[in-house]
Image 1 (tube, rainbow, N blue to C red):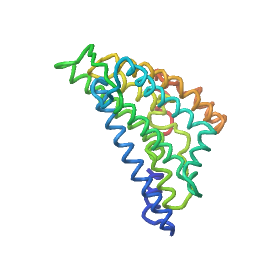
Image 2 (cartoon, rainbow, N blue to C red):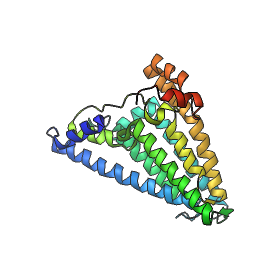
Image 3 (cartoon, rainbow, N blue to C red):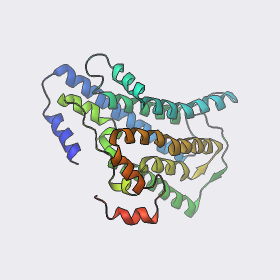
Image 4 (tube, rainbow, N blue to C red):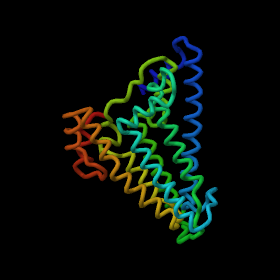
Length: 268
């Protein structure tokens, strides 16, 4: 909360510079609009088992377009997190503010990718199973809980980074972005990758199952299990022994009795 409060105070007491402030506000509106649209599209499309979307590519070519939509997200998402990808992000915006807006630009691109995936998908029209009665309520509850876990994990990791607000809010203040410390509290006390795990849970707790949803769930779950390995390499390089100690104590994706017990002894 201290980080968020500091950013908010900066917004209401900006350094002089109308052009800089206008640029930051435009990016702030854009990132939050695209982010909200992407989340809404994800929630609705997966709840329907990817059986309803705006894609209309003729079959069998739709298989290729759908495959491209699935793969473009993990490939570009991971590429932009590399060193060259980060430098490219800093150069997208001409002028002196590209680096400051890097996290916001990244969030805009990632949100646009997700929005494209879930709105341009061409449904197969095949429905294998649809929950009804008590099963529908139970699965819908699990789906909602998965999204709440994802929200909680994102907050624990640094909501201002996850939502893209860090860059634009720092630019309003005309300050260098201050990234959150290595996350070790909240859900990160139980497992090292709660964001990826929670996102994977949203893929499998849907009340409608189709070939489309299965393809999406298998591909993105594989990404959720493998991509954090690259993230942990960056953390090890950045935090050194501190991260290695954390890695030895906290499991990767599945909490254990020991991790739950030891979590009570770690700082909140």
